[in-house]
Length: 184
Image (cartoon, rainbow, N blue to C red):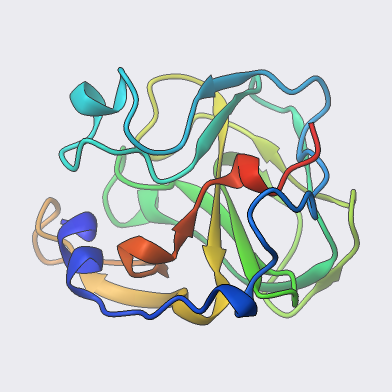
């Protein structure tokens, strides 16, 4: 239902408003990076997601792994979609505006250590990984957005009738491949 809504949003991505693809402006959010699922259409995304695409990159991380800000910025918001509908969407999440045209989300967390409005530095502990939301096991999900396109919205849930999600929402074309920006 979220992907349906996001696919209807309109956003014009001007390349000059974000760092060029391949510009490694982010540090890894965890030590010992091991990618378990890539961004976009993958062999697993077709069977795991109704849209057939994965809107971020998943990294191996056992529950309780330290999650660090990939770059300095301001925390736009935090939340927990499990409060609305257990086992759906991001679970516990943190969204950061990096003030370089990009924003990043860290999801499926077990514990959040920052609050909306906090200024964070690169490498600062912001959370601990977990297995919340729509997750097949403990890991860290990261998505990178064109900052101008992402905002936190409250939307009614079709899956959990009568309840509403509060979470980051962006036009489909505002999701960027995290690996274009992370130094690995």
